[in-house]
Structure formats: structure tokens, C-alpha cells
Length: 394
Image (cartoon, rainbow, N blue to C red; front, side, top):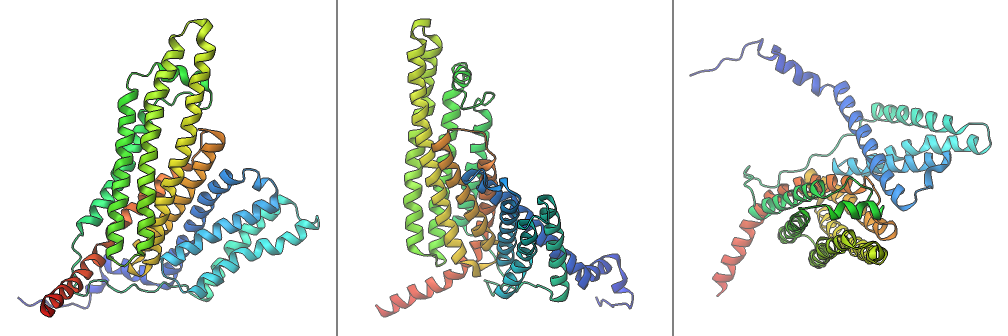
């Protein structure tokens, strides 16, 4: 059967949409939206870090302007690196974003420009200069070459299993957090101890939380083996394994303190006669403080585990944009976990969006892991030929 191409074949709506998307204005708009979204994400993520590390940093307009400019620039530069933009374009865009705030700080410090105007006009000038630079010199990403020249991309079972374990463990952790009693402020000990004492599903909820941690650690161990197969640094893999082992050990201790010791302590306090309630409350509070310490260190070690895996993926950025994105999001999630662990050790379980943001970043990283599949498959012929060569030498 012969197929003829008519003169009107390229006038279909789908072809018109494709031509529109390939036009320079459409490409400019998509790139501008990408930059803007990455800036907003960077401002939100790094803003959460600043709030945890230095809560009063943004109290002054000039400090707020510099901090926001830094956060947005870092978010945008990270996304440009993920998209494989040349380093010169990243530097140019970073300078354009920071320049308006640096220029406007002079009249602000002289008392000519109010703080609100500094923030408003700094953002207006930043977005305008960013658009001018992109229109004058289009910033395009480089194309990542295919990893498997034969065109096949079969799934690597270790990589897929690692991703499934990490996402499944995160899902169970979120479910455990929802099922855990949480109506009272966690640092209001009298109220929260009474809530814990009335809980009837305390033990199995903490068993679920421990199971989620075990799945996550298993996922990181399998990920380390996969990363090692595609050329990751053995030192980073070993450090990640050590941090993962310490993490699961501390999580077991945390579940024993929180899931067993604290429950018995609050039950004893709730059932004690009035003359013994003060001493029983003090004992329960001491157990709670031990939980603070163990939770703080296991959260820090979980962040270190995440950082080791993310660092390995950053060094494998040539394998594709998904690997680079996984490395960036894993790094940010690991930093947030470390910050949250330090905050728990210092202030206890204060309500904070940092753990939820870290979990979201960690899940994004996990979804990028299967992109290592083609690289793992690509090493198979080399390993096979090496093994055949050794047999032939014998």
C-alpha cells in the first residue's frame, strides 16, 4: 500500500501546534516560565532553611532582599545546571538577578529609598532584566546523548526496586504520621501526654513507622549498589551505607523510647494518684527528652545518608537530566533533614513545614532513580566481554 503526502498534510491542528511550540516566542515563554518557577521553588526551599538556621535573619529589608536574591538565584542556577545550560549562561543569569538588589541597596542605606520600595523595585527590575537577557541572548540547554545506542531502555531491577522501596517507605512514614496522635501541640507536655495515654493503637502505629524506616534504608543500600555499578565513587557509597546502618539503628532506639517507654510512662502518669502525679510526670518528661535526642540524631544521619546518595548522583550528571535533578533535589532534601534534626535537638518537636518539604524533595529524587536503568544496561556488554576475556586468558 502506497501512502501519498498531500500539500495540506502540514495544515492539521496538531502540526500547527507543533510549529507554534517550536517558534522563538514560544520557546522564550517556556524558558522564562521555567526560570521563574525554579526561582520560586528556590525561594521557598532555602527560605525554610534560613528559618530553621537563623530565624531572625530576614527581619530587616536589606537582609531580606539579599537573602531572597540569593535563594532565587541558587534555585534558578540549580535548574539551569539540571538542564545542562553552559556555565557562562548560568553566570550571566545569576549576575542579572542579583544586580538590581545590589544597586538599590545604596539609596536604601542612604535613607532615600524605603524598604518596601527596595523589595518591590528590586523584583521588578530583576524579572525585566532577566527577560531582556533571554531575548537578547537565548539561553538553550545542551542535548544529552543517548546512553544506549541500540535504542533499548529495559528496566534495571535493582534501580527500580530501590525507587519503589524509597517511595513506599516515604508513603508509610506519611501514613504513620497521620495515624499518630497529633491533635495537641507536641511540646505542650501535659496536653500531649494525656492524648498519648488515651491512644489505643500506639504500638502498631510505631511498628508501621519502624517498617517505613527499614524500607527506606533498604532502598538506599540497593541504590548504593546501583550507583557503584554505573561508576559512582566507592567512598561515597560506603559512607552512605555506614550512615544508613547508623540511621536504622537509631530509628530502632527511637521507636523503643517513643513506642514503648514513653507510652508506659504516660500511662503510669495518667493512672497515678494525685500525690504521685508530679513525680510520674517528671519521669515521662525525661523519657520525652531522651526521644528528642535520639530523634535529632537519626534525622541528621538520615539527611547524611540522603546527601551521600545525592552527591554520587551529582557526580553522574552526565547520565541525564533526571539523574541531575535527583541529585539536586536529594541534596536539598538532605540539607533540610539535617537542619530539622538540629532544630529538634534544640527545641523539641515544634511544628515546622521543613520535614514535609524534605519528604517531597526526597520523593522527587526517588522518582529519578529509574533513569539509571539505561546506564546499568549499558555496562552489561562491557562486563560480559571482560568476563569472556578472562576466560580466554585462562
